[in-house]
Length: 404
Image (tube, rainbow, N blue to C red; front, side, top):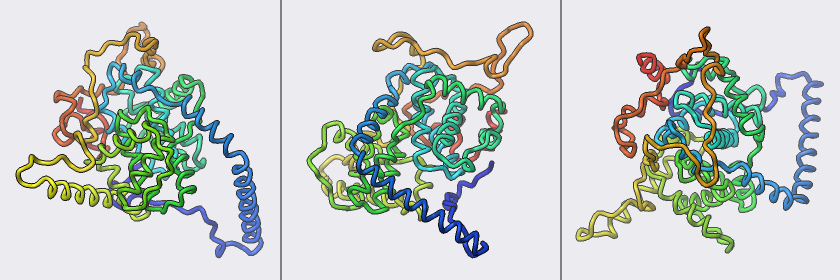
């Protein structure tokens, strides 16, 4: 399935019935059905208000149970943190192309990280795991007609995998996670806070933008969604000049998350920035760029000529989203904090690679070459990194990989 990378390529379809094209009897049935849905939603709201405390207690228990362990992901032998932004770019483009719900993206990344904290993943299967997580998340929460088809995902991956590999990886992810899919995403908690604090749509969109920026970084993999939701909304209000909401309930974890998030706002992914430059998302990427430029100008004026050059506003370290902490390529797998080495992702026969003599047969998918530049280099010079996951042209990515 092809999709455009143009600025206005993200759109929302409407599911509202076209009454003008229906017969009077059919229109009356649809109106009655909509009225019943409104009554049902109101009853659900009343019941939700009554059991809200119990619901929130259950959700907070779930977010503790389904939180990925970033220290176990650090133990991966082939997956490096500089690979993550390219896969997240791919998932964001696929999520937008199929017009999936916002919470589906966050659930996809949660499933991906939970799997990577339990299994060793070969780098040639990293994108396949992401696609399997997207399939599971879409089936869990989206409408049936919006769920991606395997052949569509396979086309987006430029045919690097056999169709059967998607199904096998999907089943392996489910079995690894013991079919525990439900996870209260950051979008769930954001919606509750927005309704409680009566935030406007621009604040809501800015907070969503900040939360998706956080998906690119190791620092927030093990951050609770409830903490991320509250921190992103507070930072969004500050960026947009909205009044601060201070109810005196902030704890050190939330304050540290807000500060850390403010240090990752510079140079976000071009794919993500393009997504949030659309009108129906309030063009918040442009608002953030303007805010950062204003803050940098203020800092520059305050510094004065005698002083050394000031750091960019809201930043005490490099803001490049790709400069996440690195581990050595020769890291060994052993016992860490009481956890045994996770088993290796299935390969060979499990993915349809067979041989009459039971000899080892390399997987069909070409192995992504390891970049020759330091992992902490800036995004633009890392030409070798672009071979991992495409941010613009899938055709260029496919031709390059086939050449290897």
